[in-house]
Length: 109
Length: 237
Image 1: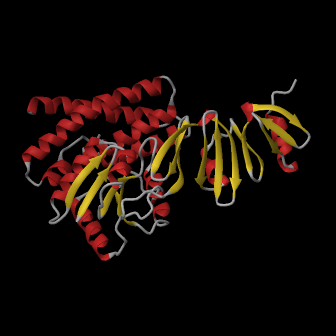
Image 2: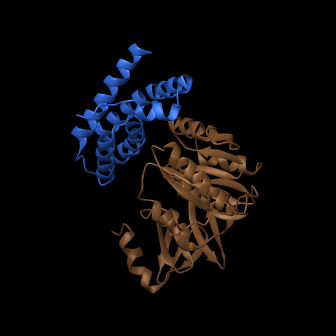
Image 3: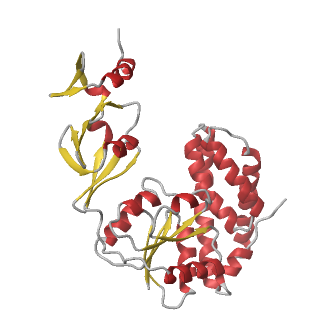
């Protein structure tokens, strides 16, 4: 399975370590909150609201270099808009991979 | 060149700021989490470029562009490629960047924007305009002020030439817009077009007589073609 990585962030920072750290910290701050909102909405079958937050998570998925994951998220977002949960399992496994990655980055920082 | 960034995600704003820092002579004047704050800013300040996210809650990127009288150059930043066709309808949109944005593509967008001549923003909102709806309210744009209106409080909308009269429980407004445009913003379950010049709030109907309805103190004509739909919507015994 595709794993989160920092290739996009490294390219973007161009060696600017303080920017890199700033961006990762923002992701570490925003991601758990968005993840929680996603699970709340999906559990209460609020698909439109879930789609909104998947849209935001989709951007973070792409920042963390998950190209296939981005496609999975984009399809899942469209399914949610049409009140379908198709793609939920795959999407949630991406969330788990990012959660683990950010937790490991905690140690690195 | 001076620019502003409008995006509801902190991550996106920080990334675009970083990309801007790589372009000589491109200054980020400010960054806003929503379009409403940016509109207030543009009332007082001129900018050359706006980096604008399309997908934002309440007031999306296209609604924002429509609220500007003379928009500056706009570079759309989005996670969706599906809006590209709509983007071509606006002369002010000079490029369309799909996130995650990489520096070479960003540089190309800036180069493109320099090559295209668009009148700079006068910092003015459309003098009169219907703005966008969100949930239970909508904004109307009157004399550069965005006025928030609670949708259920609207009981009647009447078309008069290039304007519409909007009647609410507390106040009436005249807005430069069309009935068709406001009809799109009002929820179908609450509002019904009963005549080519009138939209009514069906919950405010007091009585109905042949070809007219009484709404508060207004007697509104009902056209023959709309009567069947009106009768269907009533909770008849």
